[in-house]
Amino acid sequence: MGDRICVMKLGHIMQVDTPDNLYHQPKNMFVAGFIGAPEMNIRPSQLVEHGGRLHLTLGDQRLPLNDRLQSKVETHKNQQVFFGVRPEFVSLSDEPFAEGSCAGEMVRVENMGHEFFVYLRVADYELTARVPSDDAKPMIAKGLNRKVYFTFDLNKCHIFDAKTEQNSLCEPWSITMKNVLIKRHPLRHPGP
Image (cartoon, rainbow, N blue to C red; front, top):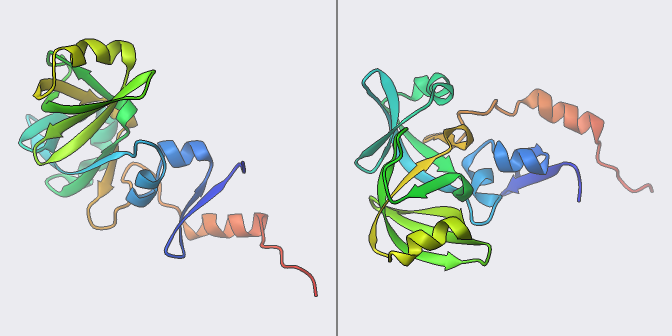
């Protein structure tokens, strides 16, 4: 496998990067949804101020942002955004988390052997959590179609601009970077 991958959409380059960066630092919603299985949870949200801190809305619930996210998305305050988090960075519990959590209904599970994919109904959408088997089995034993609590590793979350679909937490991929890549790795054409 190459050390750089080019992700394209309809003939346009979306991102050229290492596999690790494509997964952890997708530049836009297309790349975020294209890489990973199960795919990243990407849901509509708003950034609202409450008590002097920005919160992410999930349906009629709010989750406070940490300082890292707060400083990077201040310009999106009171705007529609898309929130993204990979399923392995969603934590579940039968009780609310101390640092802030939201509630969802556990509607179905998929046993993958060493882990479970747990699907939650939150407002009018579904959220996927990827949970190690030992952690998931006690929760699943209590049954489906019941309330559970979830939170995210906010250091692993993404906020996408609703209009441009660009990741607000990543530096934009500039024309200069494209030129550097082209100069470093010019296309080789077969000789005459």
